[in-house]
Image 1: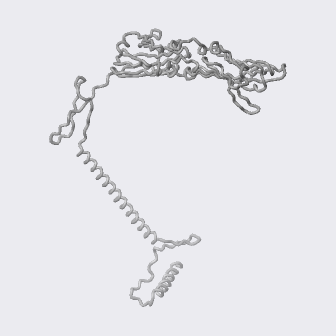
Image 2 (image 1 turned 135 degrees about the horizontal axis):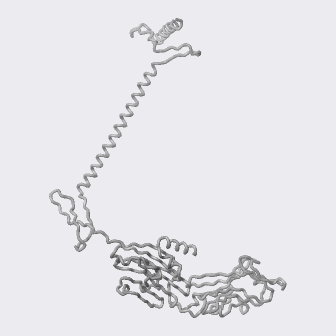
Image 3 (image 1 turned 180 degrees about the horizontal axis):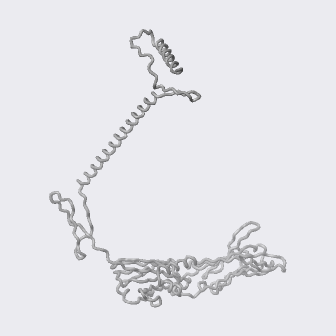
Length: 428
C-alpha cells in the first residue's frame, strides 16, 4: 500500500505540477490524479469516491470493535480453539467451562487499549500458540499478535525470549502468566463522536496561484453541517450530493463551464477516528465550444435531380441539427449489378487464358518428343567411333503390292539388307 501511494505521488508530480506542494503537507496523501478536458458551456463531474468514508450513524460500537484470543495446539494432535472474545458493550465470553474464572481480559481493554490475556493456575493443556485478534469492522482494520506458551515443572527453566517470529513464555506449572497484546491507538478508545471525525472539502487553485493560496469551495461534515465559500454554490453552478456520507460519493459537479473555471481541483477526505487522510487531484482544462453542424433541407426531386441540398443554420435558428444523406435506390441497384457483371467477365477471362496456356504447353511437348526420337547415337566402349542414325536410310522401299506372303518374312529380309549395308560402312 505504501508503494502504491508513493507511485501516485510521483505521477502527480510529473503530470500535475503544483500538486506535490500540497501532497506533502498535513492535508493528506495523494491517491488519485487526473487530467480532465471539457468543452466550454458543458457540465463536468470531478469524481471523488471512497467507501471508507461512509457514516452509517450506527452508535452500537460493540458491533464494530472486537477482540478474541485463539489457541492452536500441535500435540497430542493439531487443533484450533477459541478461548475468549469481548466487545466494548458486552461482557467477556469464555468458550470452555474449565477456563471460567481462570482466564480473563481487563475490563478497561477498550479504554486503555490493553487486551492482554491473564491465565491463572497454568496447566499442561495450556501449552500452545495463542493469537490475539483485533478487528475494527467499520475502519477495516485487522491486527493479530502471536504468543507461544510452554509449561515446565522446573523453576530454573522459566524464561521469556523471542524466537524470531513471536514471543515465547516458559512458565512454571501452577503459576500465573500474562500474555501481552496492547494497542494504544485512539480508535480503540471510548468517548469519540464519530460524526465529528469525518470531514470532506474541495479546494480550487487557479493557474499561477501557489498551493497555500488555494480557494476553499465547500466543507462537508458527517453530522450534516455544510459550509459553502463564495457565490458559486449559491448560484447552483457547483454542487455536491446531499447524501455524500451515505454512499461515500463526494463528486463535484460544475455546470456551464467558463474559461475562468480552468485550474487545479482537489478533494480532501479526513476521517480522524479511523486515521484516514486522502486527496484526489484533478486538472480541469476548458476547451472551445463545438463547431456549428450542418443539416439537410427537405428532399426535393425535380426531374432527374436526386441529390439532397444542404444548408448551414446559425445557432439561433431552430430545428434539429442532424446531417441526413440519402442515396437513391436506383443508383445503388445499378452499381450492384455492374459489379456482378464485371466479376463474371473477369472469371471467364481467367478460364480462357488458362485453357490457352495448357494447350500450348501440350503442343510444345509433342514437338519435342518427335524431334528427340529421330536423333540417336551409338558410342563404342572406347569412345572412338560414333554413328549418327540420321544417316540411316530406309532399307527397303518396295511397293505395297510385294510378293511376300506375310509380314514376318518381309521383316527378316529387311533386317538382312540393313545389316549388310551397315557392315559395309563400318569397314570402309
